[in-house]
Image 1 (cartoon, helix red, strand yellow):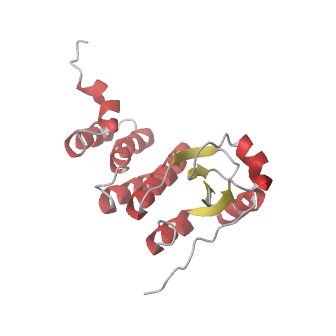
Image 2 (cartoon, chains in turn green, purple):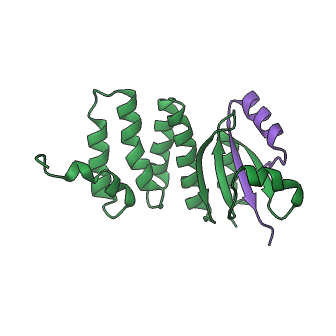
Length: 153
Length: 35
């Protein structure tokens, strides 16, 4: 399983305070209703004031879990305008977990991070070109595909 | 090699929020079914 793996534990401890709820216990019903919970595992990254910054449902094996978790933490940093932290984590996903399903998301948002930090840079185009070459069949390639349309359209 | 043993799960929402504030971290919330 995923959570007993040392690599998963290390990633969680580095970035987050973990809290867990059993959906079969009635004492948790009020919280689960408030969270609009519907399926397990239901995993969310929350800000310190309780705002949901990222979420996913469903089991993931260890490497896929770490990559998805790191994309979640990176997004939480990005939404917090903490661009340097977000960049470092997206880079880690692309370095250590480049073949995971989360990797195209890291490639896409690496460009976004660098663009949001410095709108005058050409990093959005550069990273999205990397996305097209490295992950041509990904959903995130589609999300940037307006860049591939002819200029006159 | 040192074994980290387990994720240090909390089971109280407000406790997790307070700890996240004190440690300057985010909260990882996991809802599971034991079956």
